[in-house]
Image (cartoon, rainbow, N blue to C red; front, side, top):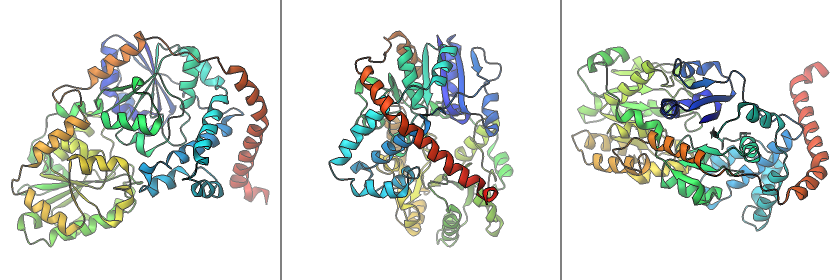
Length: 496
């Protein structure tokens, strides 16, 4: 079987490393194409070097740039914004704000005032029709024909501003079965809407299955619950370094346990440093000597590490920052550091990050503090509620309450272990806690190849063509307006 895997950029491959290697081991030819080539992620490519049957296409996977490109972006952005009018997002203002960033403010405001009216349902139908009349991208058609895959895999697919929907449209017209692989736990509730349904959709668990049905109108027959294959490795990983060697590497005292603070992305915690400073000071003032003197290891988020240059951890005793620049754990050495930081810790603290799930896999007690600092990106996101309500987290509403929780749990209170294990079984390994998810994913990809291909329905093709012709002048005007705005923004000084 010849498989084409289209990713937005190569960093997404970290979530599918085990899947791609397993496909190659079954003698399938895997071709990887990225919409963006980013030199920061060259190390992830190196992890696949010298593996038979895995090939990286040298050219970028094309993105629509034809006369219809701005028309497509505009109407898809409208659909994404209206997607957040669902009652599920009533308490998610930050997600709504992010979704409307690609629209004129006056239009976003006008639509928001209509959010509870029947006009929204009619507008959704109009936008779905606009997607249907949008012609396929010829460059993507040619790309798929040239590479001639038996199955198309695609991720992240639902990123805001993502144009990957054109790949599924082209694949359907060409008779190529397509699979949307959900990359992460938050993708179906914090990104964009599914605009064209793929033949199959691989989700982690029944929570995502329900999201796909209720939020994205996916038929249940197209959804496959595989589990989270990206976490398989942590169920088997063992430390290479001794605890003493790791303590020396990061700069902590050898004679005390430590708490690991896992930082969050810039969207979740833009000003995390100030919060962490208050948190450390509260621990150092604690009346419990076990907490007062405990080591603290801070791991910056790789996409939000710049702010940590402002802080000198030497102002506190037994506090370390590692790795200082933040690192994506994509090579064996970086994975070892990441694993060790969790494995040797006594507890883990964070705001809202997938690393908290990985700490749970290792059986660590995981804590979070729900304060006004991050209210909109904790309870204001649907995916966080799965952690807080699902049994993974010890949650508190103040740093003082959090310190009391730490003191209680670190006194060998092990009641969290059964609760966390159940969360991992439900959220990460719904097909069985003792089974890796990667083989299930590979089996399902092979099953897609064996099934009948979904072809484009020609029933309304003539109508779509007529409407497309009528809309063509509007597409040209949008393209012209966009080009003029870019010109004014970039070259205004030269024009003056």
